[in-house]
Amino acid sequence: MAGKEFLHKMKEKVGLGSSADSGKGKSKMSKHVTHGYHLVKGKSSHPMEDYVVAQFKEVEDNELGLFAIFDGHLSHEIPDYLRTHLFETILNEPNFWTEPETAIQRAYRITDDTILEKAVDLGKGGSTAVTAILINCRKLVVANIGDSRAIMCKNGVAKQLSVDHEPSVEKDKIEGRGGFVSNFPGDVPRVDGQLAVARAFGDKSLKKHLSSEPHVTVEMIDEDTEFIILASDGLWKVMSNQEATDAIKHVKDPRSAAKHLTEEALARKSSDDISVVVVRFG
Image (tube, rainbow, N blue to C red; front, side, top):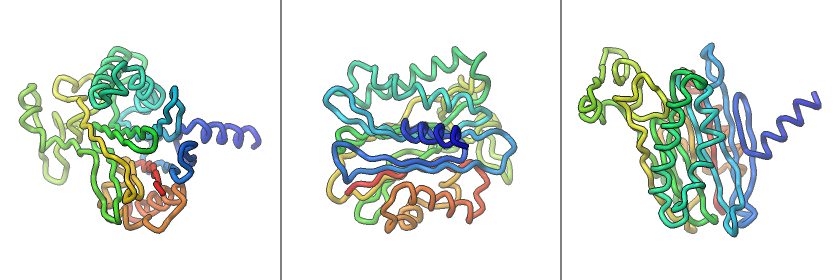
Protein backbone atom coordinates (compact mmCIF):
# COMPACT_ATOMS: atom_id res chain seq x y z
CA MET A 1 0.00 0.00 0.00
CA ALA A 2 2.81 2.39 0.89
CA GLY A 3 4.39 1.80 -2.51
CA LYS A 4 1.16 2.63 -4.32
CA GLU A 5 0.70 5.79 -2.29
CA PHE A 6 4.27 6.86 -3.05
CA LEU A 7 3.76 6.26 -6.77
CA HIS A 8 0.53 8.26 -6.71
CA LYS A 9 2.26 11.15 -4.92
CA MET A 10 5.07 11.11 -7.47
CA LYS A 11 2.57 11.21 -10.33
CA GLU A 12 0.82 14.14 -8.67
CA LYS A 13 4.13 15.92 -8.23
CA VAL A 14 5.06 15.76 -11.91
CA GLY A 15 1.50 16.37 -13.05
CA LEU A 16 1.08 13.26 -15.19
CA GLY A 17 -2.27 11.57 -14.91
CA SER A 18 -3.68 8.35 -16.33
CA SER A 19 -6.42 5.84 -15.46
CA ALA A 20 -8.63 6.78 -12.47
CA ASP A 21 -6.48 9.57 -11.14
CA SER A 22 -6.48 13.11 -9.81
CA GLY A 23 -4.10 15.79 -8.68
CA LYS A 24 -3.60 19.49 -8.11
CA GLY A 25 -0.94 22.19 -7.95
CA LYS A 26 -0.35 25.93 -7.94
CA SER A 27 1.81 28.62 -9.43
CA LYS A 28 4.88 29.90 -7.60
CA MET A 29 4.59 33.20 -9.43
CA SER A 30 1.01 33.86 -8.33
CA LYS A 31 -0.56 32.13 -5.36
CA HIS A 32 -3.98 32.86 -6.82
CA VAL A 33 -3.43 30.60 -9.87
CA THR A 34 -4.18 26.95 -9.09
CA HIS A 35 -4.96 23.82 -11.09
CA GLY A 36 -6.56 20.44 -10.57
CA TYR A 37 -7.38 17.42 -12.71
CA HIS A 38 -9.48 14.27 -12.52
CA LEU A 39 -9.82 11.28 -14.85
CA VAL A 40 -12.34 8.45 -14.96
CA LYS A 41 -12.15 5.39 -17.20
CA GLY A 42 -15.17 4.73 -19.40
CA LYS A 43 -17.18 1.54 -19.72
CA SER A 44 -15.25 0.06 -22.66
CA SER A 45 -13.14 -3.06 -22.22
CA HIS A 46 -9.94 -1.51 -23.61
CA PRO A 47 -7.37 0.23 -21.36
CA MET A 48 -7.78 3.88 -20.38
CA GLU A 49 -7.00 6.02 -23.44
CA ASP A 50 -7.10 9.51 -21.86
CA TYR A 51 -3.91 11.11 -20.54
CA VAL A 52 -3.37 14.44 -18.81
CA VAL A 53 -0.57 16.93 -18.24
CA ALA A 54 -1.02 19.56 -15.52
CA GLN A 55 2.04 21.23 -14.03
CA PHE A 56 3.91 24.50 -13.55
CA LYS A 57 7.48 24.58 -14.78
CA GLU A 58 10.22 27.18 -14.43
CA VAL A 59 12.07 27.84 -17.69
CA GLU A 60 14.93 30.32 -17.45
CA ASP A 61 13.33 33.39 -15.84
CA ASN A 62 9.79 32.44 -16.80
CA GLU A 63 7.07 30.25 -15.38
CA LEU A 64 5.02 28.09 -17.69
CA GLY A 65 1.78 26.36 -16.82
CA LEU A 66 1.57 23.27 -19.04
CA PHE A 67 -1.88 21.71 -19.37
CA ALA A 68 -3.17 19.12 -21.82
CA ILE A 69 -5.72 16.41 -22.54
CA PHE A 70 -4.79 13.60 -24.94
CA ASP A 71 -7.68 11.32 -25.92
CA GLY A 72 -6.58 8.19 -27.77
CA HIS A 73 -8.63 6.09 -30.15
CA LEU A 74 -7.61 2.46 -30.70
CA SER A 75 -4.45 3.39 -28.79
CA HIS A 76 -3.17 4.22 -25.36
CA GLU A 77 0.49 4.24 -26.48
CA ILE A 78 0.10 7.33 -28.67
CA PRO A 79 -1.55 9.63 -26.08
CA ASP A 80 0.98 8.38 -23.53
CA TYR A 81 3.77 9.32 -25.96
CA LEU A 82 2.21 12.77 -26.44
CA ARG A 83 2.02 13.26 -22.67
CA THR A 84 5.79 12.89 -22.36
CA HIS A 85 7.00 14.42 -25.64
CA LEU A 86 4.74 17.11 -27.09
CA PHE A 87 5.51 19.97 -24.67
CA GLU A 88 9.21 19.15 -24.85
CA THR A 89 9.05 19.49 -28.63
CA ILE A 90 7.16 22.79 -28.39
CA LEU A 91 9.61 24.32 -25.90
CA ASN A 92 12.58 23.22 -28.01
CA GLU A 93 11.34 25.35 -30.89
CA PRO A 94 13.74 28.35 -31.10
CA ASN A 95 10.95 30.85 -31.82
CA PHE A 96 8.61 29.70 -29.03
CA TRP A 97 9.00 32.89 -26.97
CA THR A 98 8.62 35.28 -29.91
CA GLU A 99 6.14 33.41 -32.12
CA PRO A 100 4.40 30.79 -29.96
CA GLU A 101 1.64 30.12 -32.48
CA THR A 102 4.13 29.28 -35.25
CA ALA A 103 6.26 27.24 -32.87
CA ILE A 104 3.28 25.18 -31.71
CA GLN A 105 2.09 24.51 -35.26
CA ARG A 106 5.56 23.29 -36.23
CA ALA A 107 5.91 21.19 -33.06
CA TYR A 108 2.55 19.49 -33.68
CA ARG A 109 3.68 18.63 -37.23
CA ILE A 110 7.08 17.32 -36.07
CA THR A 111 5.44 15.25 -33.35
CA ASP A 112 2.94 13.72 -35.76
CA ASP A 113 5.74 12.83 -38.19
CA THR A 114 7.63 11.14 -35.34
CA ILE A 115 4.54 9.16 -34.28
CA LEU A 116 4.05 7.93 -37.85
CA GLU A 117 7.71 6.92 -38.05
CA LYS A 118 7.34 4.99 -34.78
CA ALA A 119 4.12 3.26 -35.87
CA VAL A 120 5.69 -0.18 -35.42
CA ASP A 121 6.31 0.58 -31.73
CA LEU A 122 3.32 2.81 -31.00
CA GLY A 123 0.81 0.74 -32.92
CA LYS A 124 -2.24 1.77 -34.91
CA GLY A 125 -4.83 4.30 -33.90
CA GLY A 126 -4.22 7.89 -32.88
CA SER A 127 -5.11 10.66 -30.48
CA THR A 128 -6.78 14.03 -30.26
CA ALA A 129 -5.08 16.79 -28.26
CA VAL A 130 -5.84 20.07 -26.58
CA THR A 131 -2.91 21.93 -25.04
CA ALA A 132 -2.75 25.16 -23.06
CA ILE A 133 0.45 26.98 -22.15
CA LEU A 134 0.14 29.71 -19.53
CA ILE A 135 3.11 32.09 -19.78
CA ASN A 136 3.93 33.94 -16.56
CA CYS A 137 0.26 33.72 -15.47
CA ARG A 138 -0.65 36.34 -18.07
CA LYS A 139 -0.64 34.92 -21.60
CA LEU A 140 -2.53 31.76 -22.54
CA VAL A 141 -1.79 29.90 -25.78
CA VAL A 142 -4.28 27.14 -26.62
CA ALA A 143 -3.97 24.63 -29.45
CA ASN A 144 -6.02 21.59 -30.44
CA ILE A 145 -6.66 18.89 -33.00
CA GLY A 146 -9.78 16.76 -32.81
CA ASP A 147 -12.65 17.15 -30.36
CA SER A 148 -10.96 17.57 -26.97
CA ARG A 149 -11.94 21.08 -25.99
CA ALA A 150 -10.81 24.13 -24.01
CA ILE A 151 -13.12 26.82 -22.71
CA MET A 152 -12.57 29.98 -20.67
CA CYS A 153 -14.96 31.50 -18.16
CA LYS A 154 -15.06 35.30 -17.91
CA ASN A 155 -17.69 36.97 -15.73
CA GLY A 156 -19.65 33.72 -15.67
CA VAL A 157 -19.78 33.38 -19.45
CA ALA A 158 -18.19 30.43 -21.29
CA LYS A 159 -16.01 31.11 -24.32
CA GLN A 160 -14.69 28.23 -26.42
CA LEU A 161 -10.97 28.56 -27.18
CA SER A 162 -10.60 25.45 -29.34
CA VAL A 163 -12.32 24.15 -32.48
CA ASP A 164 -14.07 20.78 -32.72
CA HIS A 165 -12.61 19.32 -35.91
CA GLU A 166 -15.67 17.51 -37.27
CA PRO A 167 -15.55 15.52 -40.53
CA SER A 168 -18.79 17.11 -41.77
CA VAL A 169 -17.27 20.60 -41.44
CA GLU A 170 -14.03 19.61 -43.23
CA LYS A 171 -15.74 17.39 -45.82
CA ASP A 172 -14.38 19.35 -48.81
CA LYS A 173 -10.80 19.16 -47.53
CA ILE A 174 -11.07 15.43 -46.81
CA GLU A 175 -12.51 14.74 -50.26
CA GLY A 176 -9.81 16.94 -51.79
CA ARG A 177 -7.22 14.58 -50.28
CA GLY A 178 -8.98 11.57 -51.82
CA GLY A 179 -11.02 10.51 -48.80
CA PHE A 180 -14.72 10.51 -48.05
CA VAL A 181 -17.03 11.30 -45.15
CA SER A 182 -19.65 8.67 -44.29
CA ASN A 183 -23.00 9.71 -42.88
CA PHE A 184 -24.83 6.53 -41.95
CA PRO A 185 -28.19 6.79 -40.17
CA GLY A 186 -27.79 6.56 -36.42
CA ASP A 187 -24.06 7.27 -36.56
CA VAL A 188 -21.88 10.38 -36.57
CA PRO A 189 -20.01 11.48 -39.73
CA ARG A 190 -16.68 9.63 -40.05
CA VAL A 191 -13.56 10.00 -42.20
CA ASP A 192 -13.52 7.00 -44.58
CA GLY A 193 -16.30 5.50 -42.48
CA GLN A 194 -13.96 5.10 -39.52
CA LEU A 195 -12.81 8.16 -37.57
CA ALA A 196 -15.21 10.69 -36.02
CA VAL A 197 -12.69 13.58 -36.09
CA ALA A 198 -11.09 15.29 -39.08
CA ARG A 199 -7.74 16.00 -37.39
CA ALA A 200 -5.62 13.79 -35.15
CA PHE A 201 -2.15 12.60 -34.29
CA GLY A 202 -1.24 9.20 -35.73
CA ASP A 203 -3.86 7.12 -37.58
CA LYS A 204 -1.31 6.09 -40.19
CA SER A 205 -3.84 4.16 -42.28
CA LEU A 206 -5.99 7.30 -42.67
CA LYS A 207 -3.25 9.93 -42.68
CA LYS A 208 -3.54 10.84 -46.35
CA HIS A 209 -7.05 12.05 -45.63
CA LEU A 210 -6.48 13.55 -42.16
CA SER A 211 -4.78 16.73 -40.94
CA SER A 212 -2.59 17.26 -37.89
CA GLU A 213 -2.63 21.05 -38.25
CA PRO A 214 -3.73 22.56 -34.92
CA HIS A 215 -6.08 25.43 -34.32
CA VAL A 216 -4.15 27.94 -32.19
CA THR A 217 -5.52 30.89 -30.23
CA VAL A 218 -3.98 33.38 -27.79
CA GLU A 219 -5.82 34.95 -24.85
CA MET A 220 -4.59 37.41 -22.23
CA ILE A 221 -5.54 36.69 -18.63
CA ASP A 222 -7.23 39.70 -17.00
CA GLU A 223 -9.15 40.42 -13.80
CA ASP A 224 -12.37 39.11 -15.38
CA THR A 225 -10.87 35.68 -16.12
CA GLU A 226 -12.22 33.14 -13.62
CA PHE A 227 -11.05 29.74 -14.89
CA ILE A 228 -10.38 27.54 -17.88
CA ILE A 229 -11.54 23.97 -18.47
CA LEU A 230 -9.79 21.43 -20.68
CA ALA A 231 -11.64 18.16 -21.20
CA SER A 232 -11.99 15.17 -23.50
CA ASP A 233 -15.19 14.56 -25.43
CA GLY A 234 -16.38 12.24 -22.67
CA LEU A 235 -17.51 15.47 -20.99
CA TRP A 236 -18.55 17.52 -24.01
CA LYS A 237 -20.81 14.80 -25.44
CA VAL A 238 -23.16 15.31 -22.49
CA MET A 239 -22.55 18.92 -21.36
CA SER A 240 -22.52 22.25 -23.15
CA ASN A 241 -19.78 24.81 -22.52
CA GLN A 242 -22.07 26.96 -20.41
CA GLU A 243 -23.42 23.99 -18.45
CA ALA A 244 -19.87 22.98 -17.52
CA THR A 245 -19.08 26.55 -16.51
CA ASP A 246 -22.21 26.88 -14.40
CA ALA A 247 -21.57 23.53 -12.71
CA ILE A 248 -18.27 24.63 -11.15
CA LYS A 249 -18.52 28.40 -10.86
CA HIS A 250 -18.83 28.19 -7.06
CA VAL A 251 -16.28 25.38 -6.58
CA LYS A 252 -13.09 27.13 -5.51
CA ASP A 253 -10.81 24.07 -5.34
CA PRO A 254 -9.87 23.16 -8.94
CA ARG A 255 -9.38 19.43 -8.28
CA SER A 256 -12.84 19.28 -6.67
CA ALA A 257 -14.19 21.19 -9.67
CA ALA A 258 -12.62 18.73 -12.12
CA LYS A 259 -13.98 15.78 -10.15
CA HIS A 260 -17.44 17.35 -9.99
CA LEU A 261 -17.49 17.66 -13.79
CA THR A 262 -16.57 14.00 -14.27
CA GLU A 263 -19.28 12.98 -11.79
CA GLU A 264 -21.84 15.13 -13.59
CA ALA A 265 -20.85 13.57 -16.94
CA LEU A 266 -21.28 10.10 -15.46
CA ALA A 267 -24.67 11.09 -14.05
CA ARG A 268 -25.63 12.11 -17.59
CA LYS A 269 -24.70 8.61 -18.83
CA SER A 270 -21.39 9.41 -20.53
CA SER A 271 -19.80 6.03 -21.23
CA ASP A 272 -16.51 7.34 -22.69
CA ASP A 273 -13.26 7.98 -20.84
CA ILE A 274 -13.59 11.37 -19.12
CA SER A 275 -10.65 13.63 -18.29
CA VAL A 276 -10.86 17.20 -17.01
CA VAL A 277 -8.31 19.88 -16.11
CA VAL A 278 -9.43 23.08 -14.36
CA VAL A 279 -7.16 26.12 -13.92
CA ARG A 280 -8.45 28.85 -11.60
CA PHE A 281 -7.38 32.50 -11.60
CA GLY A 282 -7.85 34.78 -8.64
